[in-house]
Image 1 (tube, helix red, strand yellow):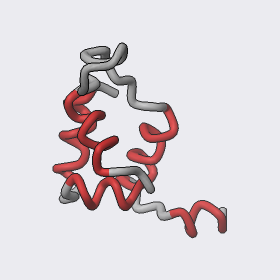
Image 2: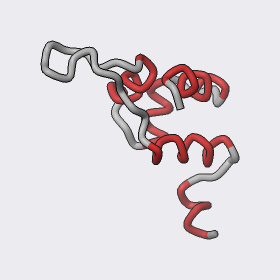
Image 3: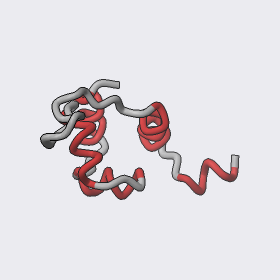
Image 4: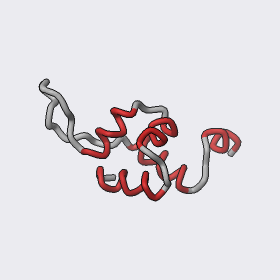
Length: 75
């Protein structure tokens, strides 16, 4: 999943960045990193690409299919 794919998914799901962060249990800053595709700041990681973890990619698919964490536990 590319940063643009993530952003497209979020918008298609009618979620704000804050809403997406809440849905995944992530910080708003992390969602912004996933969408920008690059790390911010002046440290050694600045400017390096950000990889969207497989767990977040799977969560996007689950949410797109209407699953919630409680639904997943019942299956």
